[in-house]
Each structure stands twice: as structure tokens, then as C-alpha cells.
Image (cartoon, rainbow, N blue to C red; front, side, top):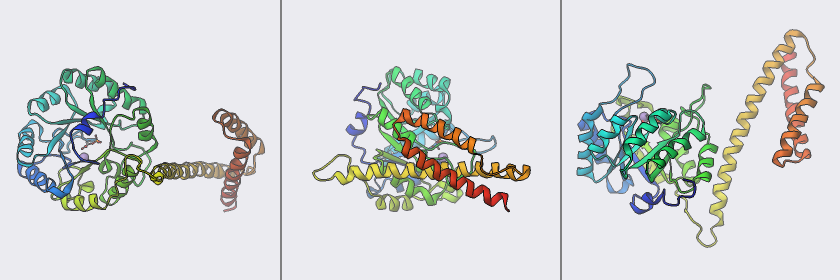
Length: 362
Ligand code: PEP
Ligand code: MN
């Protein structure tokens, strides 16, 4: 699969626009809702070329709206006929795939809760064998690059060549500003392993709320993603699922027009472009560094509490020397200099002592 240069051809050949823009409600609710949203999204200037709608909804807890089911598939056929938009639905088992094929859905996507399950992915790949469907694979809910790649390999082995990846973020037990942490390094690693597979960002499921969608979408475009999939509903507050992250077609339209689309390839004297992409990667890593350092300090503070309770000295030189030895060994393997590691860890250690001093003396 790694050397197959044809995997992204479908996107180049189908003239779906750059960035590929997929939009539509989290869930198909009624025929009227589906058609209303599709007509609004299909207006010329909107750049949307694919209409998404969840028909079978994987819900974390039972009792929530679990989708209209097959009843909604004719509505999607009607969307295609009336607006010219292609259609996309989520499939999670063989039965869903059979129905989606029967009703001529153009693009299937495998949801994050399905990508984690090799049995389900295999079952889907088996039914797709012999078709030339476009299949988009969302990252698994957990931050596991190999599991994501494994799903692609199963589809590839079944002969599917029109593939794409959707980055929808990763779940975490820690509360954060995101519904699902973007962990940008994972899709970046995916892209460097499989440069031919188009990658699409799903800011809706990363953010979980409206006010961060634009930021995440712009970051994705800065990292040269090939497309965006964004949930849009004519009356977001009343949506039957994911109400807090959906936006109206008008808001989506305005947002899309504010986004800066970067050049895909170099034109003369546009090295700046490459620089922007690399700087954005650095920015993401720097953000992560601060998060990791903060997490480290939180643990340092817990140790400070224990030292206070037991009346033990803050400075434990032997422990610091052990840490340094371990870090030197690790750094030698990755090519970082002793000088750099010494300086870095002195700073970290000093800050740890400062924080513990405050606790012990409080
Ligand atoms: C969805 O796209 O509506 C959906 C359920 O997404 P995910 O699989 O990313 O949670
Ligand atoms: Mn949703």
C-alpha cells in the first residue's frame, strides 16, 4: 500500500474542489430537514461538493437518538438529484454497506468507534470487495496510528483504491478545551507514511463546540490537508445529535470564505509557503511541549505535598542524577547533545524546586 501512487487519484480526477468540502447535519432527522440543509449548502459560492448525514448513529449511551436508519437513504438520493451534491454516510457493519450500495450513496465513511474494531472493519471490507466506492476512514478514538493504518490495509486488500483519511481527534480522560484532542502529530505521521492518501479534517468532532471550528480548520489547511468535513444544520440548537458543534449553512459559508487556502505546490519564489507549513508543525509541537511540562509540574506538586506531610527535604540530589543519566542515554540515541540536555533539565529541575518550595512552606 505504501508505494501505491494511485490512492488519491479519485480526488484529483473528480474535480470536487480544493479543499474538498463535505458538509451536512450530524444526523438525518426528517426528509424536510435533509433537503432544506442540502439546498442551502449547494448554493454556488459555498464550495460544498459533498453532503454528509449520519443515518446510523453510534451513541456513547443508549437512549440518545440512534439515527433514522435506512428510511433516510431515499432522502439522500433526492439530495443528489435535486442539488447535484455527492452524498456520504457512515457505515459500521455489512448491513449498512449493503444498503448504502443499494441506494447509491457516493462516499462511505468508517466512524471512529468502528475503526478501533478490526472485526467490523474486515466485515465492511469484505462486502465492499469488487466495488469502486470511495471510503474515508476516521481515526480510531484512541491515539493509535497503527490501528488507523490497519483499517486502510484491510480495505486495500479488498481492492478498494479510492481511499481517504479523516482526522477527527482522539478521546482523552482529561478535560480539555477540545471534545477530542487533535494530537496533530498523529495525522502528520500518517501523512508522511502515506503521502498519497488524501487527509480531511473534521473540526466539528475535534472541537465539540462552534467557537473553535475556524481555528482548527485553518490549522488543517496550514498543514496542507486536502479537505474539511463540517457538521451543518439549519437550526443547530434544535439538532437531534451534536447540537453544540453544528453551524448553519450561512455561518459555514462565511467561515469557509475567511479561511486561507495555502498553495499545494511551490510556485517560483514561494519558499515562504513551505516555511509556513513547517512553522505550523513547530507551533503544534511547542503547544504540546508546554502541555507536557505542565503535566510534569502537576506531578512534581503532588510529590511536594508528600514531602510536606512527611517533612522530607525538597532537594533529592541522587534522584536528580538518576533522571539525568536516563535522559543522557535516551538523548544519545536520538542525537541530542549532552549540553542541551543538561541545560534543559537544570531549568526543569529548578522550576520543580521552586514549585515544591512554595508547597512545603505554605
Ligand atoms: C459523525 O461524523 O457524526 C460521527 C459519529 O463521528 P465520529 O465517528 O468521528 O465520532
Ligand atoms: Mn456528529
